[in-house]
Length: 177
Image (cartoon, rainbow, N blue to C red; front, side):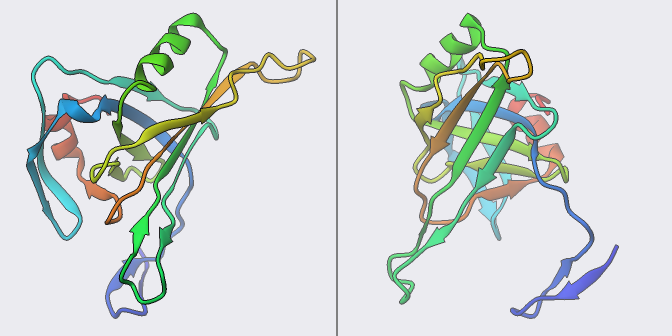
């Protein structure tokens, strides 16, 4: 495993990395016990889901989900914030998927995701994410066109998203990943 030294003087893994998301679990923001959150150096070691709350889990193949989180600021770092955005493309439209997206669009959510490098992240822990837009689904015009629905969840945060390890994930959300 190759390492390199960053501008800030710490060692970072410099091996190849691949983009994309393997799995996403979406929970209503109110369904998380935020008082139980324990974070050190942007790494979550404890967080509980409230009783009677469950989430929706989606597994992705190919290039069907992205997460971006650009930092924004005023140059003086006084008003810095991050704007996480999670985009998901679901192949084959269905009434069940439409109903899930409809339910998720009603409330703030938090997204737990596993990227293709097997890193685990919690996106929207600061203020939640909101359903922002969708292409409404498309059947395409020809048989080679995709039949799919694309949806976006976006938010604003005072800090970058937190990372957590697989053991914490398994305890947190019952082995969904």
